[in-house]
Image 1 (tube, rainbow, N blue to C red):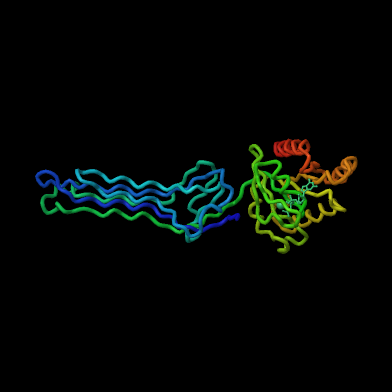
Image 2: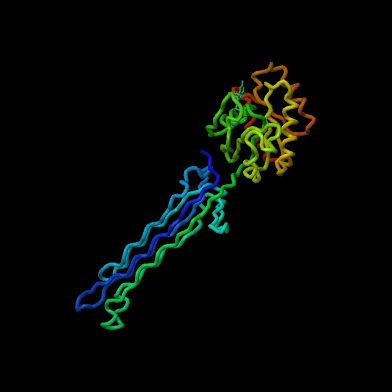
Length: 317
Ligand SMILES: Nc1nc2c(ncn2[C@@H]2O[C@H](COP(=O)(O)OP(=O)(O)OP(=O)(O)O)[C@@H](O)[C@H]2O)c(=O)[nH]1
Ligand SMILES: [Mg+2]
């Protein structure tokens, strides 16, 4: 299940306590406790959403060991590094932004482990009365945080249900999006990578999506970062032009900057019409003064061409 928001608890490790121990001639020799592990968040571009993060789970760094005999410092607790997808925002309970992860490998410290307590060796100069003095380790910080993801992509796929968006995504990328002969088989945004270009498949739009019909507009926040829109129109339709215009009107009505993004029109399912009819269909769309491509999910050459067309289209922006 796709997840773009999750609440979890983070816990840094406790510091180890100082030790009371005595060496030769009763000299205080107890060591200092180690430092508890820190908690970091780290960007990972192999993750596309937050579904692998368990809601309400406590993600904790290790506690440190206590001080040892012979003035040995306790071992530090191991840090905990929670991997999150790129463009994750981390908020505390008061909705304050703690960190934003925007890069692969970017590591942000969010909680600090507790410091270790001093052992009695530290107090040895204070004389006999201090021989049994020591400190407890400090507890590690704890925080309830909310992770929120803003999906990043270069091109977003839009169009009526069944236009063939997911089929093309799967053919062009490593994605394995659900394809089905019924409407709204895609229920949440789905990403795939084509070289260094990230494509985002979206649930189908219909008339009055802007008013909450169909699957509604909750996906819109994920489209902000995209550079362009690929608008899919099925040539199986009796009136592809009408389908196109319906979706354009809907984009305007949704009221984000979606309608203003540069657009490429992709006519799909060319295998379902006669090949000598394709040029005329493409021509119909020329009046919009936008790039137009035609493809079938079953035509390898056309898919390779589309891959090139999409990359070139992006390069021109
Ligand atoms: N003949 C033919 N069928 C196709 C082609 N592309 C997709 N289909 C079929 O059309 C149906 C819908 O395809 P999807 O890729 O799921 O369409 P979608 O636009 O992602 O649909 P939603 O997720 O519901 O918005 C499926 O039955 C596909 O097998 C194509 O190029 N040619
Ligand atoms: Mg789909």
